[in-house]
Amino acid sequence: MEQLVEALKKAQATSFAFYLKAHNYHWNVEGHSFSEYHAFLGDLYAEVWGAVDAIAEHIRTLDAYAPGSFTRFQQLSSIEDEMSVPTGRMMMAKLLADNQRVLSDLMAAHREAEMLGKRGIVNFLEDRIDIHEKHGWMLRSFTKGE
Ligand SMILES: [Fe+2]
Image (cartoon, rainbow, N blue to C red):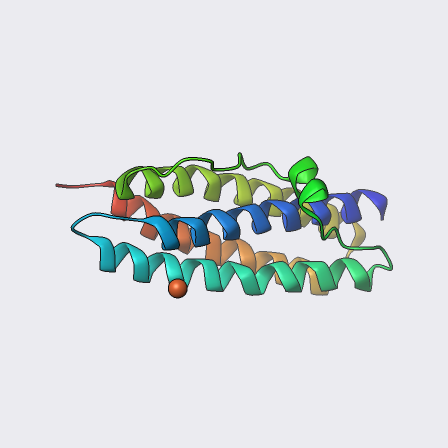
């Protein structure tokens, strides 16, 4: 059970870091495709924001405490913090790489949930994996062409 809780905490922190980076980029993106990027990033951060809450509540279901501070998120997250303002296209490339990190943390938690037969958490994580694969498709599409 302890490994599942730890894997979910990591998935929560990585999802929070991903959410924050998408929101940061939504605020600061510039350029001729501003409105497309701004709108896409708005949908992206809002979708992942909802998942952070759901992961935390699954941790509470397992009678453990969910991380909720910058310090803990920083310790647990697989995503590097963003301190600069990249170009729109670079933002998409960074989020695409980070999306892979979210996916691997979700898959690690999924393996632990499978081993314990926690069907509800397995199903929840499968939905998250599916959604992040879709986010990956869109982010990848932004980085191609032109
Ligand atoms: Fe906004």
